[in-house]
Each structure stands twice: as structure tokens, then as C-alpha cells.
Image 1 (cartoon, one colour):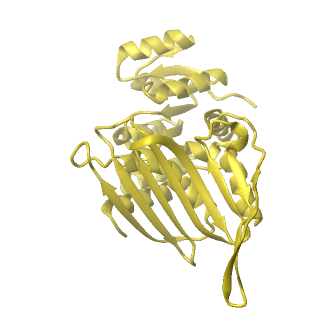
Image 2 (tube, helix red, strand yellow):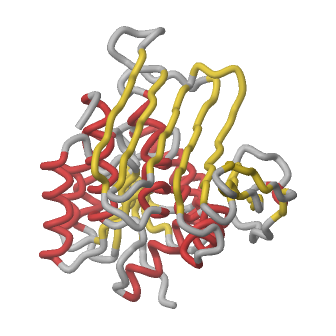
Image 3 (cartoon, helix red, strand yellow):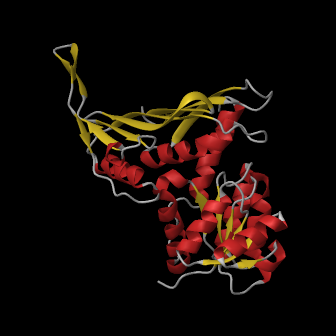
Length: 320
């Protein structure tokens, strides 16, 4: 395919990884950061141009812009990019409020541009395979999903752990569900800094009987990134924190049945599920480039990100 020319705005904690990946894919055309020294250093490292925001917007040779700035700038920068005719990949969360997210989605559609949001774990080969198992019916009807994203740090002082960690898990849970969200409740606790939650628990009820819950924390003594899907015919576990790649996705042929009025548990051995050893971030960046070229709808487009944001906002309020 023809490779689109990409500019990355925001070359900090996560943006530097996006710069590296798009450079590796042969798509990097320019970099931009609020700190001119960072911009110059990244440009020198990757042999590309150092531009400011206005320079990126005015450059007709730049097809798309990757935005990895603080979330409060996402809407403003995205709208400027769409007005300049650029496609946009924006890091999660899409925005901090629903009005801004709606504006971004509308502007992309009216301008015929791609809007993709960086819900990284949706592009992990382990999750992609898990989603296949669920959609194929191999697990049977899904009863419950739970996800834990826990670690020790990195502490933030501008966003709480819900907004920092949970978008990934909410995006995965919504993708696995075939029902609409009926209700959301959230429980948040702030221990280190007043008003900035270090722990959050999100409970999602779907139409029908399926439910999901998500726990996120950066005050946990160990790292755990685990997603479990409980079906009527089998159960599956996607554990991205598992160091052995072959153990990242497992299926358990456990079933709970009622025999003559007596509940009985039929257990099965854990089975490894083969998963391609691919970089989720590389997959995500390739997906964006492909969408820009083909015009196909990204898996994590503006509408998907709006669904995630609705759950985030409801959980942050406590209950909806």
C-alpha cells in the first residue's frame, strides 16, 4: 500500500513510542512537541523534520496527525487537524467530556477523514484471538467478564487511575459484549493525593443478564493485567502480564450445571491458545495507516470511543 505521511504531536512519555513505531513503518514525516528541545532531539534521532503545530497543519504533504498530548488538548488539536484536511489518530481517552468527543466525531465524518482512538489492547493478538473465541460461540453464552489492571505506579497528579488505566479495559469489555449497556456504577478511592483516585472499581450491567466489572489501581504490590470471560460452555483468561507469551491466553473447559436439582461443577484442564507473537502497538499503527489508505472504519473509531467515554463519565460520577 502507499504509505501515508504522518506527523506526531506530543513526543513525551507515550508519544515517543508512537514516533518510534511510525518511523519503523516508514511513515514518519515530522515531529512536534511543546518543548522545542524535545522536538529537536526526536527529529535528530529519527532523521525527520521538527515542526510546530501551525507548520504541521499548513504542510500539504502531511496526510495524518497522531496526537499524544494531554487529554485536555485532544479536542482542540483534532478539530484543527480536521479543518486542515488531516486524518487523526488520538491517544486515549478521546476527550474529557462527551460534547468534545461528539464534536470530534462529527468533524471527522463531515470532512470524510479517519478518526481513530488509541485503545491499544484492542490490537493485542491475545485479545484479538479471545474476541474470536467469544464471537464464534466457543465459550457459549457469556455470563460475566472481569478485568484487573493493577500495578505499583506510575502515580499521576492530573488524571486519576480510572481515566489513566480503565479506557483499555472498558474498550475490551464493550467489544466482547453483544448487548447494550444498561447501567454503570463506579467506586473510587484517593489515598495519596486528595481528589485523585488511586483505585477504582467499575461495574457494568448489560441488557439481558451479562455483567462486567473492572478494577484498576496503581497502588498494588505487583503488576497484573488480566481479563477473564466466563461463558456457559467454557471460560477464557487473557493475561497480558504473563511473561511467557504462550501462556497469555488460556481456555478452561469448566461448566456449571444443575443435575436433578443439584448444582455440579464439571472441570476441565487449562488449554493454551496459540497467539501470534506481534507487537500490539505496531498492529495499532499499521491499522491506522491501512484505514487512511483504504478509508475503512477503524476498530476503535470515534463512535467506539464515545461508548467508552460514556462508561468512564458514568463511573467517575459514581452511578448512572
